[in-house]
Length: 136
Image (cartoon, rainbow, N blue to C red; front, side, top):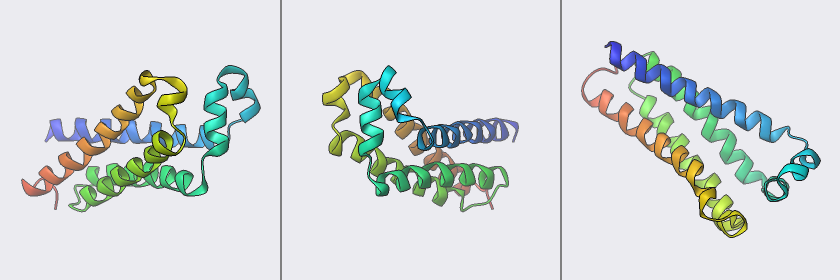
């Protein structure tokens, strides 16, 4: 059970970092960002409302999922699955709608791929914990 708690807390901390990233990006001064990274500023300016909504849904459902996981509730996996799908939608725009790879090169995919992998791993972990009876 200790291993479960450690993993669940790490998942929660990761998702809280995602919440903070969302808030910082949604309230960022785009002129300031443009001085350091004009491509990033352009991406934020052009990001449609539905992609911002997907981003907000991804971080919110991930954080709530982590809290529910810590509460050992079986429906945590569904919140993580929702978060995973929202991450796919958000990054779908980033890479297909904005073409971040074309603008910044292949290294721009590293962190988003990590985010996708952790969202998927969280979903799978919670689903397995439901199946083995750890979650009620």
